[in-house]
Amino acid sequence: MPGEPNAGGHEDPGGEAVPLNWACTNCGYRVEGELPEKCPDCGANREEFEEVPIPGF
Ligand SMILES: [Zn+2]
Image (cartoon, rainbow, N blue to C red; front, side):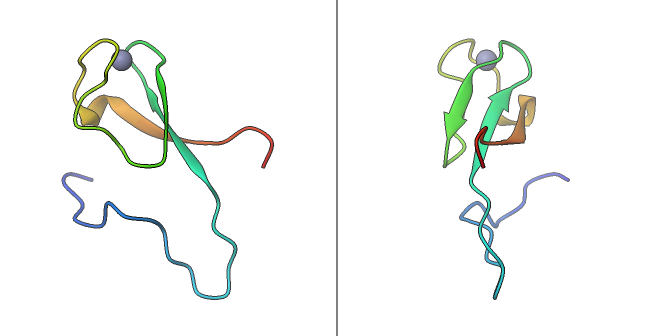
């Protein structure tokens, strides 16, 4: 899904928010919360990131 404007959080009324990490599929770099424009580690753009659940939740 290209360019979703909803970059904030997931709002799920009545549900519990599941914290998410972003993981760079190129180098494995993990980001908490907001998705950065580019991977600070390898410079891959945000399409290279995928949402992953934070371990422990
Ligand atoms: Zn990366």
